Amino acid sequence: MFLPVISELEPIARAAGEAIMAIYHQPFAVEYKADESPLTAADKGAHEVIVQALARLTPAIPVLSEESDAETMQARLGWSRYWLVDPLDGTKEFISRNGEFTVNIALIDDGRPVWGLVYAPVPDRLWYGGKGLGAWRIDGGRTVAIKTRPHADGQAWRVVGSRNHLSQATLDYLARFGDIARGEIELVSMGSSLKFCIIAEGGAELYPRLAPTCEWDTGAAQAVLEGAGGSVTRLDGSALEYNKPDILNPWFVARA
Image 1 (cartoon, one colour):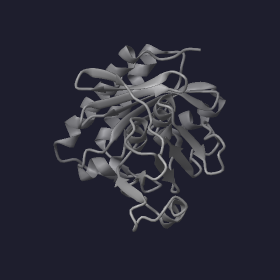
Image 2 (spheres, one colour):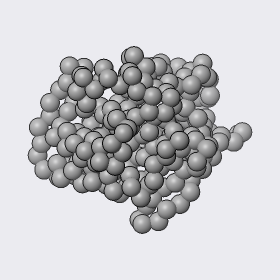
Image 3 (cartoon, helix red, strand yellow):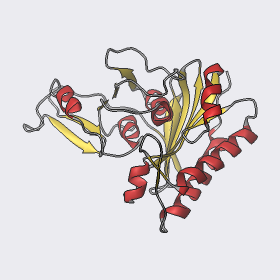
Image 4 (spheres, one colour):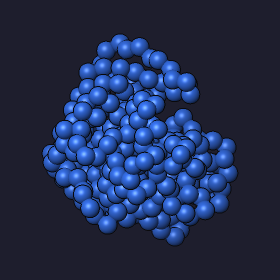
C-alpha cells in the first residue's frame, strides 16, 4: 500500500500555511456558504496550493477538499483511496485571529484514514503519523516521536473541547467521568484539529464531540492520534467511517 513520505508532504502543508498567513495579517472579507459556515480567501488559496501540489505528486490519487466542487463531491463515492483535505480547519479561529487553526491532509484507504498531517501555521508546528506507523511532531526544526498518556486512576480527566461547540449534550456526556465543579475534570478549550494533537502528545486524555463535524475535519488528526496510540470511535465504540454518502460525521469520542 502506498504511504506518504513526510519530506514530500511537509513542503505542501507549509506552502498552504504561507498562503493562509499572507491573508491573516491583512484585512479580509468573509463569505458564508449555504450551511452558514464562513469562507475566506485564505481557505480558497490554501485549497488551490494543496490540490495542485498533490495532483503533481500523486496524479493517480484523487483529492477531496472541503472547498471541492459539487462534481468532485459526487465522484468521491466511487473512490477507494484518495486524499482528504481541509485546507483551513478552524476558519472561525482564523477570523478571530487566535492562531488556533490548521492545515489538514489525510490519506483515506478503504474508508479509513491511514496517514495524516496536521500543520498549525501560527506556532509553526506540524504533527503526522498513522495507525501502526507511529506519530511525530516537528517543532523548531526538531522531529520528536509522540505518544498518548492514558488517564491515571485518581487523577482529574483532562478534556479538550471546542471553543465554539461545547454543547449541553457534551456536558451531559462528561458527567459520567466526573464533576467539573469538584475539579474531577479539567477542561481546555481549543479550536480546530489541534484538540486531537494535544491528546496525541500526552496533554489530555479525552475529546468528546457531540456536535456536527465533517470527514475533512477529522481524517488527518485521527490518523495522527491513532499513530500515537489513541483511538477515535463513535459513541458506541464502532469505527468512524469515511467516504460515506453523507459527509457529516456521527458524534464521536477521541481518547488517549
